[in-house]
Amino acid sequence: MKRRTFLASGAGIGAATLAAPAIAQGRIEWNMPSAFPKAAPGVGTNVTRYAELVEKMSDGRMVLTVYGAGELVPPFTVEDAVQQGNVPIGHNTPYYAASRSAALHWYTGVPFGMTVWEHRAWLQWGGGQEIWEDIYAERNLLPIYSGNSGIQAGGWFKERVESLDDLQGLNMRIAGLGGEMMRKLGVNAVLMPAGEIFQALQSGALDAAEWVGPMLDQAFGLQRITNYCYTPAFAEPSAALAVVFNKDAWDELSEDLQAICRAAAAQCVYETTAQFDYFNVTAMDQLAEAGVEFLAFPDEVVDGMRDAWNEVKEEQRAASEDVARVLESIEPFMEKANAYNEAFLKRYLPARG
Image (cartoon, rainbow, N blue to C red):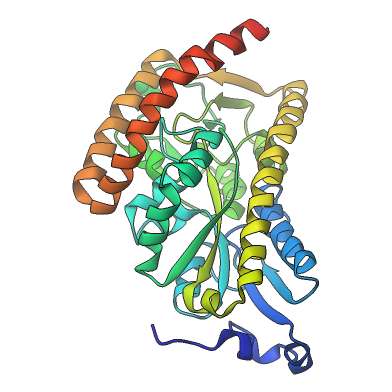
């Protein structure tokens, strides 16, 4: 990509509207689109908090103006806008750009995959970040992990799921490789932006919808359509958020501003994960009191999901060198993590009562 002068121009859609005096005073002002509504708990507040931290930590030298889903660019094209240099920075969940590399699913969340803290550990200590940066460098991008929802809900269903037969022909909103897994079980998996889920479920266009978990599902009103919520999401045991920079824009930042951008993202990881952990607990309690039934998938369905996922995973491995490289890194770590959890968490949680 031809190098752009982001700092001098204020770069991005609407750059002409940026005030020249702000640049003259040494302040960097960048537009930052997100794939999510900016007021949405967790996924939206993650990016607004990031912008707030960057401005405070830089003492006002760097200001990010956040635009919610669709306000500046369509939700699923944030990374394209950053890659093309239309904006210098964006916010999304990596698998929204998985058409560019299937390996990005593993940088968000995959069926029967890592928990939130296993994912964080692999990124920081297991070589995951380095592979991620290599993949993004091909598109002149730099990714920084900024948060995670933790384990999600398996979905809101209008009818009970008592066997694999009950999945046949269902229209279900579900993202990522979880959608590919469910297709193998006869589900018509549909990907749509968050803002469209309620209406589609209400109108009958959807029979079921997987979004996030109690906090966000309650905020989006899914409990107003059906009282059946299945848990957990074997399709999405964690789901990461990311801040993505155009590499040319990143390279023009001073070293201290680069450090601030990374530190702000690290702080958001802990704040957002804690936000989900706390408010999912309180929201689930409120939803249960309002009559929502939190149901478990039958063993037959869980086993069917696992078998379908193993097929999808091997198809992905065979089709993509990036996926094969990621799996070569993840699988040995997960094998050890499983043994660790057998000895620790699986013994502790049942005993806690």
